[in-house]
Image 1 (cartoon, rainbow, N blue to C red):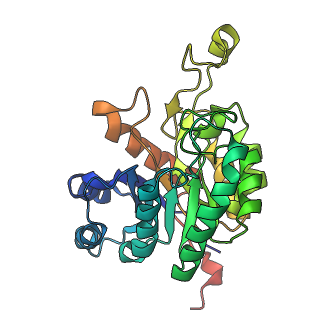
Image 2 (spheres, rainbow, N blue to C red):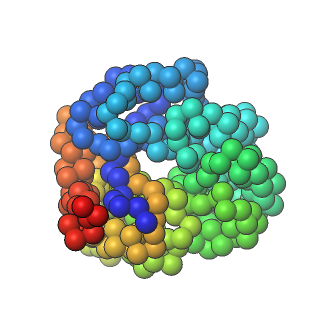
Length: 295
């Protein structure tokens, strides 16, 4: 059983050299390196070497490599995601995070045959390389009937996905925010699905129930703004208790840059608060029992 769940932060792949040294100095214990839809001309092999040099002997490590794309719809996305799986070991990352993809404008069910084909092949690749693929639970503006680039946002979809691709290399990148904006109880959900969770994003949300009652949920008002952990609705002590109870072996990486208050010039203020809050929720730093000592 893991002694403690490490707390890290997400860093955009194009900003690594500028941001990573500050995040190491701030006390984050690991990092997730992320790209959205494109690598932006970044050479992953060169980036892995630069990151290794920056991290040095700090003890901070890369936990995951994220490439969030639509591998069902676009061949170049599929090829880049396969490349990320191939080079993840250069970062020391055991997980590659992504979207499940979708057939844009069509239903979740319509995409399952293509998901089975594409992710069947990708998970075999991941299995061969000792890597897990984690599907983020973000709707990306889609619905069940009209998905965008990620069908993997709802537990009904997860049942279809995991039945279509029953590989132990396929799991979830989970966070409560994406469930709260669907008015799903994230704690009850995590209890049910924790054994499929291989990576967590540290991001929360606050549901404005008054706005829901007055304006509904169809976009007239942001009824569930995303928040940095410590400012949202979720009690992360419950999350840690569920994770420890299930023997979770991963980490939690704060996904900043979304909070409507703690962003811009307050970004690091919010991230450092999240770091301290999440460490507190896990019970602080691991302390071995003195009576278990062999000396």
